[in-house]
Amino acid sequence: MSSSFVTNSNHLIDLNSGANTLSITGAVAITGNLSVTGNATLSGNILGDRIQNGTTSIDIQTANGNANISIGGISNIAVFATTGEYVNGLLSVTGNVTANNGMFTNIVNVASHTGTLVSVTGNVTANNLAAVNLVINSIASDDSSFVTIEDGVNVNGEISVTGNITGGNINTGGKILGNYIFAQSGATSAYATKRVLQYVEGTGVVTYSNYIDASSIYITGYAIEIHVSPSALDDSGNGTIGTPVKTIARAQVLAAEAFETSAAGQRKTIVLHPGDYAENVTISTQFTVLTTHELVGKNTTLSGTLTITKGCTIDGLKMTNLVISADNTTGSVDIIGCTVTTAVTKTSSAYTNFRACDISSATLSITGTGTTVLVGGNYFTLTVNNAAAGVLAKSVVSMGPVTLTAGTVQLADTLIYAAANTGNAITQSAGSVITVNNCQTLIPDLTNVARNSFGGFYSILNAVYDKANSTFAGTSLNSILYSQYINADRLTIGQLISATGNITGGNLAAVNLVINSIASDDSTFVTIEDGVSVNGEISATGNITGGNISTAGVVKTGSFVTGTIPTATGVGAGARAFVTDADSVTFGNLYTGGSGNAMPVWSNGTSWYVG
Picture: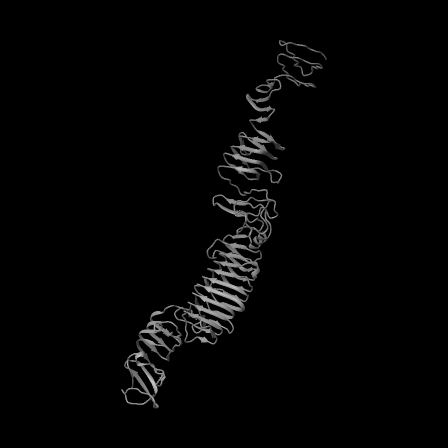
């Protein structure tokens, strides 16, 4: 059957028989409704404002307007406009969804949520993703399936992810919780590697995982520091505070090479986090600073040998052995607040400064040249064996014993102890030079003085030691402890006094007192107010005045003859002398000379008399 029908708004074309068909090859204009219970096959267009079946419809209300889809009486489930598609219900996609902006009220997992959601098995890529809650539990295991946010994520609620979130920025007023959290900075260096922080909720513990990516963000402002932590899993970090390396050796590599935008060699401060580093380390980059931020190294330990080949600073580290082999062209070596438990050896010429170190359990051996300074701290044995070596120990709390085979040692304000009660605190060999100034040498339990052996050139100033049992086989440099005046209740002199000025004291006790250069004026002399006690000889070319002179030996005066003896009026009453030409030998007779009698004489202030 083939027919054509034309109808107006009051007529209906209705074919109810399944065996019948209506074929229309031209245009049909219907001003009313077209109801079809079977199938309608068209090769052209349907022009109208609605397609409807029950309460579900597609509406195009105006020409060239939006297409609104209503389902089950709910209007605008989906709206198609020139600006895009707007979906109020479920968007189920098996392929990719790509958009400049993806805006959703909720994004949740379809398996556990029955409300409004977006379920994606592929990738969601967007410049910005705004959501109240973002819950992603079922990201596929392959790396090609993930959520990528290029610019930023703004979330008012919680983001819970079991897969990966990668993108530009994540801004939140709450917390970021996850098994693995990492970010990238766009760094391009070969040493820039991404380290992952693993956070354990409940305990709050953060550890460094071995998950590695192409780059990592700096989370510290100290960009030229290199951080080392024994809790890092390996050396693949870039050395920032959030991505430390595991070993000091790796930090040395980073310090020696260019990193990021820093110039080569500028990244030289290595910060050691507390813990034990079981390795042997060589400092080979000049001006490296190896620090622990500890005053005295105790909690940060190097269970190995630290070898220094260039000028550097080591601060607060505890180590087993320290070897200094840097020469003086590479800068000074500063060892500050460090502890060494076994041995310190200096074999080179670098100026080396130990400050406030604890080396009380380790030997300190200096076989290299140059200057070594020890300021404060505690030291065990000190051995110096190089003629071109110089060691200054100042204000050292305790040290000893000291063995000087060759070189020069200056000890000031320092306590030196012996290894045994009958051993030497200081042992010096011939040819070496030592100065002991304001020091004490004591036996091991510090209850008594210790002996010393001086075999080279030595100076001893204001020192406390066991002189009686000490050995003086070398040459004294006759150092003088100068004071303009000595005013003491008691002055004890071991061997000799040589003075050109005044010596004034209550008591003067000496083995030998020799005064040869007293000035001729009477204002310069030796004055002893109370007494002089001398076991040996007092020899003076000037005057000795004072209270009492008491001696277990003899008092010897000058020997004179007539013409050489001073005038009695000049020396005053009570002066005594000895003459060899007295005429009379009778006590009390006036002395006249000319004969050969040797007699003592005395002055009454006017004349000399025999007696």
